[in-house]
Image (cartoon, rainbow, N blue to C red; front, side, top):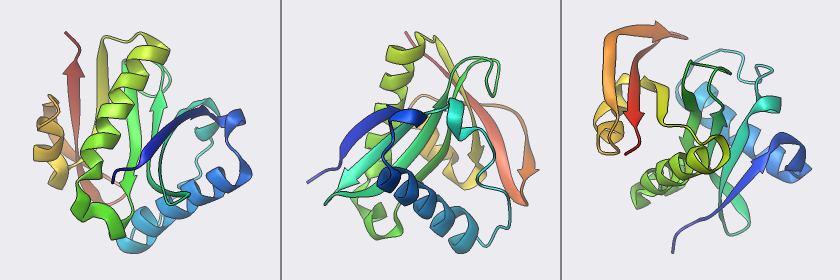
Length: 150
């Protein structure tokens, strides 16, 4: 089985969807990666949220931004899969859903991401190409990557 995906604007999220999304982000980005940073950064209200649901629980998540909101191009951020489900390769489904939602909601032709360096090959498998040199973001090596739609 695979998760079902919901695409919602901030004001469409239920309280439990919002709570579970923030909890998942905190579990992975703050606790698992041992990175102290401000996850709730004031940008969630303008993002579109991609929720991967399995057994009525948020197990996959990403947030999407319109061109100009984060980067010049549309963007995907806070891409996360619950540690319990990473062996199922649901990250690929999450990226496909996110790219489709960007096409649908923003009619964008290009997407830019700030990817953790260790995920470079994963994003390359979805057509992303590294742009420029790597950099540290919150103490973790990152690279900027872009993909263009045909």
